[in-house]
Amino acid sequence: MDTDPVRESILDAAEDLFYARGIQAVGMDAVRDAAGITLRRLYQLFPSKGDLVEAYLVRRDARWLRSLARHVDAATQTPQARLLAVFDWLEDWFAQSDFRGCAFINSFGELGGTSPQVTAVARHHKDAFHAYLQGLATAAGATADTGAQIALLAEGAMTTTAICGTPAAARQAKQAALILLTLDARQVASPA
Amino acid sequence: MDTDPVRESILDAAEDLFYARGIQAVGMDAVRDAAGITLRRLYQLFPSKGDLVEAYLVRRDARWLRSLARHVDAATQTPQARLLAVFDWLEDWFAQSDFRGCAFINSFGELGGTSPQVTAVARHHKDAFHAYLQGLATAAGATADTGAQIALLAEGAMTTTAICGTPAAARQAKQAALILLTLDARQVASPA
DNA sequence: GCGCCGCGAGAACCATCGTTCTCACTGTGT
DNA sequence: ACACAGTGAGAACGATGGTTCTCGCGGCGC
Image (cartoon, chains in turn red, yellow, cyan, blue):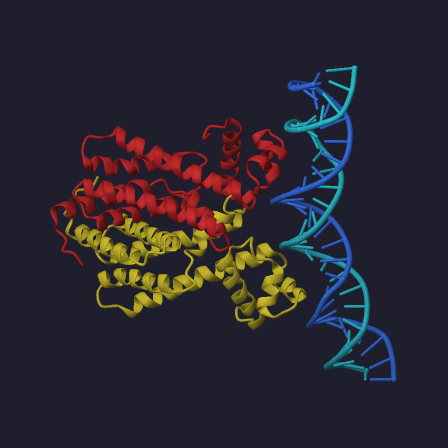
C-alpha cells in the first residue's frame, strides 16, 4: 500500500523538482516527464497538484526525520553525543551539492500565505523536529528550554547555509549547542 | 529621486501583498488595484515584475536594518544590552498580526532556485544582518564566531515563530544569546 | 473471432497572468 | 481654436500551466 512503485517514482521526481526549483515553478508536465509516466496515470494517483505537493511534503517529513534519527542512533555513546550528532548530520546534508535549505521552510515561504495544507505540514514537521531535539536535550540532562534553543540554532544553520552558502554554520551551531548543553547541565546560568 | 510618492505607494502596496501572499501568488493587477494606479503607470516605473520584486526586496532590506539599528541605538546602556536589544526588537516584530517570517527567507524559498536576482538580494540581506550582529558581539567583548552563533539563533527564531506560531522563540533566543555572550566574554568554554 | 475495458500519447480546453495596445479624453502652448 | 502629448480605463495578446478529452491500440472474457 505504501510501496506502490509508480507512486514512489512520481514522488521521487516531484521531490527533486519541487525542492530544486520551488513548487509553483514546476508544472505537472515536468513531473510527468521526469517520472516517465503519462499525465493520465499521474492524475489517477494524485487527483490534483495540491495532492501531489502534500504527498511530497508528508513523505519528505517522514524520511527526513527517519534519516536523522538513524544517524543519531548510530552514535549512541552518550546522550550528549547523540544530541551533537544532529549537527554532524546537518553538516553532511548542507554539503550536498543540491542543498537548497529546508524544504518546509521554503514551501512555507512560497505557499504558507495561501495554502493551509502546506502550512499545516510545515508546522507539523517543525513541531516534530523540535520535539525530537528537546527529547535528546532532556535525555542529556538539559531542560526542554535548552532543547528549544538548540532547535533554533539548527533552524538558523539551515537557512543561513542555504542563503549565504557558508559551510561554517553547522559547526558554529554545534559549538553553541555544546556550550548551552554543558552549561545547562551544570546549571551555571541562572534561569530567566 | 528616492522619494517619488507614486513609486513609494506602489512599493507599499507591493510589499504588503508580496509579503502576505508570496510573490508568485500576486499578480500585477493586484498591485495596481492596491496602489490605486493604472497598469500603464506601474509599468512606466517598473518595466517588469522582476524589477518590482527586486525594488521591493531592496527597499525592505534597507528599512528593516535601519529600523533594527534605530532600536538598538535607543538602548545604548552597555554593548551587551545593545546586542540583546536585537531580540526585543525581534519579539515586537514577531508579535505583529501580519508577521509571516523573514521576507528574504520566504522569497529565497520561493524564487531562489530560479532567480539569481532574488538570491543575490537575500544573500546580501543576510550577510548584512549577520555582519551587524557580529559587530555588536565584538563590541560586547565576544568573538566574531559568537556573533555568528547569535545570528543563527535570530534566524532560527524568525522561521520557528513564522511556522510554529509560538511566541516563545524570541525570548529563548535572547536567553541563549546572553549565555553565549557572557560565557565567551569570560572565556569559560574552550574553543573547538 | 469479437466486443469491451483500460491504457499511452498527446492535443485540447480553460483560466491566469505578464505585458502591450486601443481609444477616448484632457490640458497646454501658440 | 487647434494640434498634440500624455493619461486613464480597460481590452487584447501571448504564453504558461492545471486539468480533461480524444483517439488509436492491445489485452481479456465469451
